[in-house]
Length: 436
Image (cartoon, rainbow, N blue to C red; front, side, top):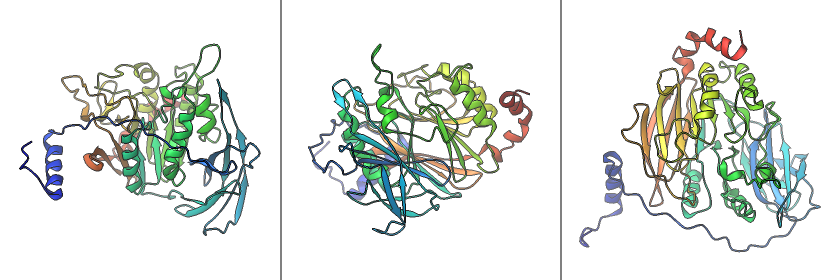
C-alpha cells in the first residue's frame, strides 16, 4: 500500500464494512499459543471456576483446588459478602500418566431466582465470584463459539463474547486442545474462568477431548472429570449427551464420539427425550454437537454422515429449529435443510468451529456452493443467538477482525412452531418418535 494512503479510524471502519459486503476481506495470519506465567495461589483457593445449568432453577459450580482436603461447599446469596445459603457437593480426581489432577469439586446450588445476580464463594476461602441466572421467559441470548483452544485468537474471541450481553454460552466441542498434555486443561480452565464463572457454559465433547490410550486409558476421562453437565438431570446415562431447558428453549446436546446408531443408548435416549418435548412450553428446539452434518468445506467432509443418517430423521420428525456444530475451523450457515436439500420444515445448520484453535482456519470450500448453503467464510469469530419470542430469533456471526467484532452475517429465523410444519406433520411425528 502507498505510504500516503493513511486513513482515520472512522474511515477504516467504513472500509471494513465495505469489505464485508463485497467479500474482499483479507484474513489475518494465525496467532501463537498463549503463554501462562506461573501464578501461585494458596492450595485451598479455588481455580478454574465455571458454572453450568443443573436442572430446574439450579446451577452447578465446578472448581479445582490443589488441597485435597478442601471442602466442596459453596456459600451464596444475593448481596456481596452476605451468604444466605450453603450447598455441599461432590468431588473427584484422576491420574493420567505422570499427571495427577487437583481435587475437582462439583456443587449444585439452588433453587435460584431467574434473571438474578448471585454472589458466591467456593470452599469457604478465596475470592468472591458473581453469576447471573438466565431469565425464566423469553427473550434470551446465547453466545456460541466452538473449537476455542488457547491462542491469541481465542483471547480475542473471549473478549468479544465478554462484550455480548448473553445469558448462556453454548460450546459445540473442542475446548482446551490439551491433546494428552494435562496441564493444558488447567491453563484453559483459568483462561475461561472470568467468563465461565459468571454465566453458565454448556458444552459437548469434540475429538480433542477423547485422549484415549488403547489398552490403558478410556476416552474423555479428563473432560468428564472437569466439565460435568446435567446428564443425570435429563435422564441420560452419559456425560457425553444430555438436554436442558432454559426460558423458551429445549436444548439437546449430542455426542459425536459415542455410539449413535439405532441400537445405541444415545439414540434411544434422544428418541425418548424428543417425544417428551412440550413445544407450548419450549417453542424452540435447538441441538448442539461437534461434527457438522451439512458442511461444504473440504475439511472433515462426510465425517458426520453416519450420525446424520441415524439421527436426522428423529430431529426432522421433532421439527428441530437450529443445529449448532463445530469441528470445521470456519463458519457456515445453511437454509432450512433436510435429507441433503432445502426444506422449509428442516433445521437451520450452523457450523461455528472458529473460536481460535491452534490448528488454523479451514480455508478451502467446495465449488460450486451447494444450494442449501446460505453463507460461509473461513475466519475466526463467535455467534450470538437471541430468541426474541416464540416465533422469531435473531442470529448474528461476528468475525474477529483486527480485534474488533465485525458483524459479518445476520438473519432472522422463524420458528417451525409458527410455520405450520409441526401441525402438518403430527402423524409423522407420532409414528417415528412414539412408534405408532
